[in-house]
Length: 383
Image (cartoon, rainbow, N blue to C red; front, side, top):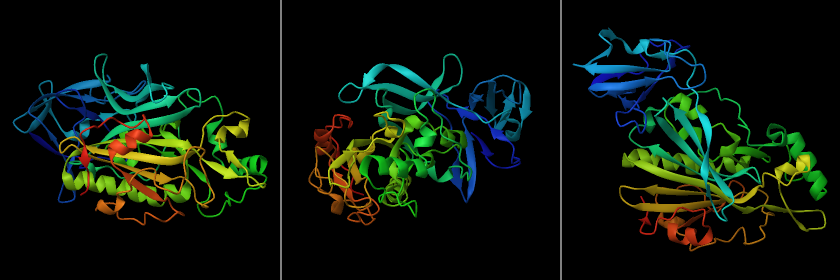
């Protein structure tokens, strides 16, 4: 191995290149040792990559450079080099690729993938998205959490803006503004008491595959596509949903394993109008388009392929307790609720102001929605 201190001698403006694993299926990630990030590059040749349009390697002005690890030292060609020389002109950027297969239930969705184009022949997927092109909303996403490396992730305070990537016909940024949300509710419900504009009573851009589940800074930035977002009440997003995301990362870390994660929405949230009639909520109504439904439930399936254990966790996407859904009782568990058996579900599951929570076996959840992964033989992921 060549052991490289990931952050040593690196300036603020330095853009790390992405080191492709020898099997070309993913990246080599740093590990955390005594508070320092260490990158272990295996002996032999690896690709150092700077993906993205008009990006280039500082070593050779090309998108990739072949680096060799020999006797604990890094070489480019015959020259010994230091890690700080392996930079990119710009921050590496992914793109989103439309697949040829349909997905989801009914077969309304289209496969999209957030990918890293390393070379003509090497493409590394990061997030797989089943996207409903008709409703302009994701049905679900699928990604992995690298439990052996997640504690070494880069903590980045600034966040990029969300990108449409040609998948939205309306001004998505505008429909998420609190002012427009208030105006929308006033128009379709006759009141806007759900969106007080104070505190966290508004619909936020709820990441499905969240930035914090990824290790490298460019990977975190790669999650900022509207194709990876559902409208989620901020009180839930920053409440029990945040607790769920944190607990899942802790679980991956404690198990030192790679967890597979699927995340999506279920049904459409209805709110009562002034005559107490339930009205389906679509953010696209702001532009008179029945697009971007607000989900009634947001769910996550967590699966450990090594132990073949999994669990489905749902949270009610409502904060006032007055939300309903056409095909279910929102505040009753849609399955036999097993949250009390799950040691790492350690938040207030019955708090309906920050995301009432239900836990199901993956088999029960699969009976609720065909958008769930088919993990027939999975045991329950209890601890």
